Image (cartoon, rainbow, N blue to C red; front, side):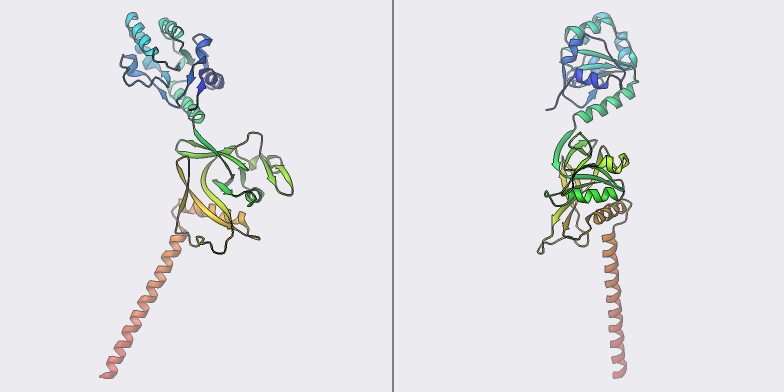
Length: 329
């Protein structure tokens, strides 16, 4: 399980959260092991049976005013009982002051007290985003990720199938590269986010040419730091006996980190303009998002045409029967 120390958190967010340390520096050595935060309302009142002590605790104005209203003896015992539960750290919003006994107990039991000048709402929002990002589920895979018309397109397939060449052509056509060859997928806020698996720039290996820096060649406007993944396109070698989807009525999905995303299996053969097909797939998905499905429209029109022809045949059949009946008379 992933962990960070309170010191790591303090150093990383000291400026953004306007943090200052109240207790001794040694209290920063504790570890944070949960992406969630907690406001210890009932715990301050003495109810600790379901207290999520392993989370970062936030004290807002309500909690601080309640603590200030307690008699010193009650305050001492309640805070001591609560702090015995191995809390990682406590962050106080608005720069509010706590009774001195709380700082004494925190130092005694090795719990960091941090003060933030942010309002409680802003503190919770910023801290939650930071912890969600730190503790997000992630995995790395061999792929290329590109932003096409605002959609995150994940190109996958065997090495040498042409993912990088396709991405290069798409960048040349005005789209943006997120990462090539190695992509890190992260699960954040019920979304699948992709970013480069390496942190040293937007390099791309083109066989026969070598490595190029996409940011330098095409400009920073053609690169993205990360992108939500909306569609996966699996590039596959063309096989004569393979049954490929032709109409688009069947929807296939790939699953990454528990998130299902649509996947298209795209056969690749010499002379095939893959980048244009990727653009069309992106535009088709955008149309589906606004309520238009070309496959369903095509199927509906075919069925309507069949219905019309069937009705016409029935009418013609009845006319022939009527004609034969009249001639017999």
